[in-house]
Image (spheres, rainbow, N blue to C red):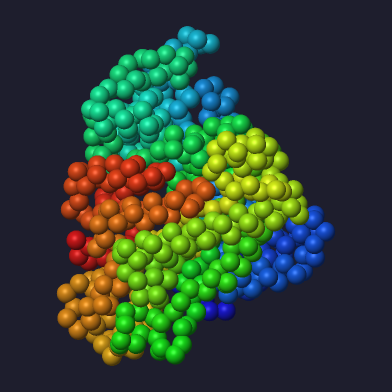
Amino acid sequence: MQLSENALKVLKARYLLRDEKGKVTETPEEMFQRVAHAIASAETLYGENPEVWETKFYEAMSNLLFLPNTPALINAGKDIGQLAACFVLPVDDSMKSIFDSLKNAALILQSGGGTGFSFSHLRPRSDIVKSTGGIASGPVSFMRIYNTATEVIKQGGARRGANMGILRIDHPDILEFIKIKRHEEELANFNISVAVTDAFMQALKNNSEYNLLNPRSMEITGHLKAQEVFKEIVESAWDTGDPGLVFIDRINSANPTPHIGTIESTNPCGEQPLLPFEACVLGSINLSKVVKNNPPSPPFSKGGTGGFSYKIDWDLLASLVQLGVRFLDNAIDVNKYPVSEIEKMHKGNRKIGLGVMGWADMLIKLGIRYNSAKAFKLVREIMSFIQKQARDASSELARQRGAFPNFKGSIYDTAEISSKGRYDSYPSGLRNATTTTIAPTGTLSIIAGCSSGIEPLFAIAYKRLVLDTELYEIHPYFIEIAKQRGFYSPELIEKVSVKGNLKGFKEIPRDIKRLFVTAHEIPFEDHIEVQAAFQDFTDNAVSKTINLKQRATRDDIAMAFMCAYDKGCKGITVFRYGSKRGTLVKVDEVD
């Protein structure tokens, strides 16, 4: 296995089995064997030979071609057996619901999952509580309780607890929610997002007011100027990175099972919209390995683009998509769910989220600049291919195993298709209500030795903190190309390590500088263009950070939010460098 030193550090710190004394008792190969064996055991349910699929799953993982989400790698084959990364729990307007969800969230967090909540059903601050004659404290006060519980739970959990807290834009407490994280000590274990409606966006564009609704009575309780509320969102996002925006009506227009419920929240990173009590298992294909050398041109030839002489291996990509869909569908069957309602919902819709990582690395190998028209075109080619292959694989599994139980009445149901005309007809139905998601793949990409998710390179060289371990990274392709093209020297590598990007280095050819573009050299419009292009062919949603330089203005953030909405994204998260406490990556001169 070709694991980097950093990959081994991460695996030893979090993933490999330990004995009672905390000593690591498993090798990376044994970890992949454990996971492959556990996932392949589902094949017996359908009369298939599990050994055949165990070998295939092992080969894909051990060659770092495909990796499932972190809980699957940690928990598969163990007593805890919880394999899903993404959950959404309901929070209804009663003390019982609030604390039942907190209890369930504790079980999920303990197992390494991340949980999303919409607090939009809770009555606003100062509303009357009829049962006691008291006064309601509002959604933010209960979020603080959830945050404190997460702080305690994460000490013994599989990884740091993560939550998503969402509030609708028309909730009477929306301004308190928008401003809450301007205080550094508040809600440190939450990402927060505003559920923005189309009605609000229209009011914003018309410079008009919009209604606030009391969720208890659904009565109009007041009005706010859309532009003033938007200004507060922008101010908080500029200052702290929170809140993000979730375009909730757009998400529900793509809800595959509207007859089962309405989507109100997402997982902590925003890429997985889910119904209350729903879960999803994720996996990612390593695109940096889905390319093959294109002889006779040598790698890094001086003629041409200056990149690798590679081309996409479409046959390999197709086989990995088919394998990934089967792997993730199996994971639903062998999963040990912490809450019975979640098991019922997940097995009812059988949502999976197959995505990609190593996008920036693939582009470098192909000699294509990250934010170029050629790259934007390739996004659509690759993601449309993946989506079709995933749907075909899910359709084939439905033929063998049956469609997901809630298929009848879904947007894929043949009766529904004839009127909407949006989807191909699947005679056997589909096995999974969703098949594709673009996740951030933080530590997974370290294990796979590739760039994370669909992000550009953050820097050519940097230090990052993972699990309290400082990891030093310099991009291996840059070192290789520098040697091939004859401008390598230890002194140059040292200087690049200090600066982080290639600007100002006269000894580095111009085409190489263009190819190795970093996140802060890319305009926010191009970041959003990438997100929107992937979203066009992704069932669920897309995790993508819109990186902004430290000197970015509030107007930049406002324009980014509007651009994301107009381009068809399902949500947006901006991050102005240095704005959020605990920025882990140190890079000089990011401006």
